[in-house]
Length: 535
Ligand code: AMP
Image (cartoon, rainbow, N blue to C red):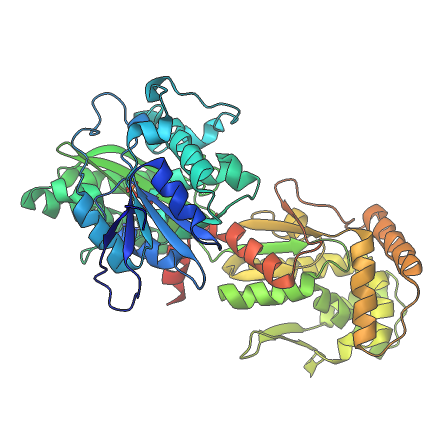
């Protein structure tokens, strides 16, 4: 093992001993010793069950898991607890080994920062952090902290070149800053896996700093998650005002004798203050117990989240929406089916597709009901008839664009869709979802794919159904023509929402697209918070 120290693992399930690394050359040799991806868990040591949860999440077939332990001087300000931060390498190695790490790396300052004085180290070519990300929560009380975090993460990732970096949702602001600012993640050279907060029996998040609390302080600290639970209860009771929710948390923390740095309701993605809870927001709290700084947060929901998906025909919207809804335990709202059902009714009643008194009467007496089957499939009934299958027939497909262009139909259906939106808990697919129907959706996605890719997909679909497809050039021309019509029509033209996320689906599998949307969702609603709501 090239002189590297080796520690027998406590975990009997793991067959190989864990390697202990110090210098960069030891690390480089270990990295070069095997092929396959490295999954990386950066820490500052004092490893506990929270860190172990990260290590377990990092494991996978054919993957090597590397944990680093480095108390990074550039993220501590003068007077912070840099010198008193726990440093117990033997215990850390034992904890990492027990959780299944393959190697643990203890670099010294010069291994990370070279000969440069870390205090003088600068951001290099990295763009500055977006001000909104550090204007709230820990930002104002820890100036320079997040620059220090980015600095060390940039250097660690440069050296390790992992396929995946695993970080905790406990430090939500750190996660948001790293995710949105670190070049390796922005440029997708590395993926980020966030892991839910691990908590002690009384709800306090595991933290290396908890060990420094006296028994009395530890009892006081337990009131931190309790204050958040009280705010959750107030939301369940109908409270939506940020000031009231923040003040409630503050009062509870003050009463527990904790020194409050902040209690703030923010947007989970942008971290901008939320004056009012409308959908999902994060209530973050930072306190001092004596000299020990502790953080916690809770996701507050005034309704279940909404995801709105739109994009041109042939981008895989329906498949992606269905799979994503199933994965997240949300309902799949296929709004196209609602327009199809109206088209079905008009054909059934042999009514001409145009505005006027007859249409008005049809809409006034129409009863359109949606329900969801055991496997999440949408069942649609119109005037008591289950039309879920009938609306897929070609004659409906040919009629529905003209029906959807009738303003009265759009008005009635949009109103009904918005009623669903009051409860939330939807992945809705269809035109105008993010722009007009659910402008407050937590996540608005616009799926795209090049015309050539969509033509290829359509040809493959037709071949699979045993149909003969026209030449690709003809399919491309048809798709381009349909795009043009969709984008230029006066009623609900196809366009992305201003605050939507474009997801290009060329050359990636449906599974990868769904994974990407799931990641985007969890940037707005943490994995931990969502898993808890599912139970
Ligand atoms: P630290 O050693 O405190 O810098 O933390 C290293 C990583 O572990 C960070 O990504 C933290 O967010 C994560 N982490 C720390 N405590 C917990 C916890 N209680 N639950 C989940 N992740 C945690």
